[in-house]
Image (spheres, rainbow, N blue to C red):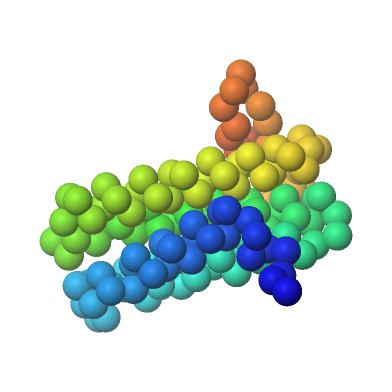
Length: 145
């Protein structure tokens, strides 16, 4: 019997992204920080989806899905950096970013399905709706040092 997270399309997409990335990672020298960062960030997407889907409250689920969104964006930036360093082709970056964009949309839809009341007091991040687009708004906070 599969775990609940295994049934999620976004989890399956995260695994496919890892499978796609694995054979092209050797094109990025291990001596560059982006090599291990892409590996870790891509892994983080799947792990946070799985952990979040197992949480009992919507707030907890959304928090982990939010972390997965951050890892998706980190992977997109990582592909850009690897491309600028001459390690990846235009086609590879395009394919990878299209996959990441679809995962981001799926994650945001999952977050929306768990309600709009997500507000992370620690980071000041809140999920909000602007017409049909979902985005994150960060509040400015004063920090005493």
